Image (cartoon, rainbow, N blue to C red):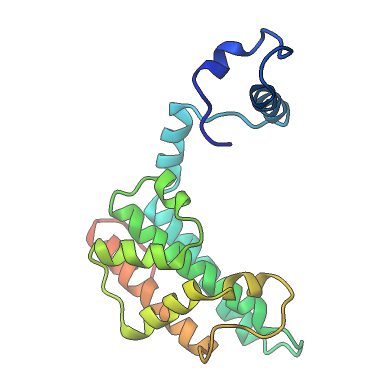
Length: 194
């Protein structure tokens, strides 16, 4: 919900009539958010996120998405848009592999979540942190960052905008990320099933 001026917490419970409309709206939104079960995170919440969103957890989740994509591909479905869920699963796996790597580089969960689905930013930070991509992997990741391919894999829109990238090429990037990041985790003493 964004940061609030510190005085807002002091104003709560005093009634909102007489306060400027911006403050009234903020107080109402905060009250509604609290009624909807949303609350501001505490230090304990952040600590729990750090403990529970580990590089290995992100890696294993990425692997699950990659394996799901491979399994779906192997079904040889006959539907016209069968490539869309396969691409989406690979795209999500690539994102999670990159985020797993960044978590090994001491990026916090909040920072990693803050990068959202920005493939270019994730790749740039991974490069800056010493990750070595192949030329093909850079091509795939930049294509994902330059286009609406990820969104188009989720929603009905005809004609992908990722140029000549085949599913085989995207699958290859996914597998290389799996191997490289899995190896790095193993070298750090993390037990990885590869």
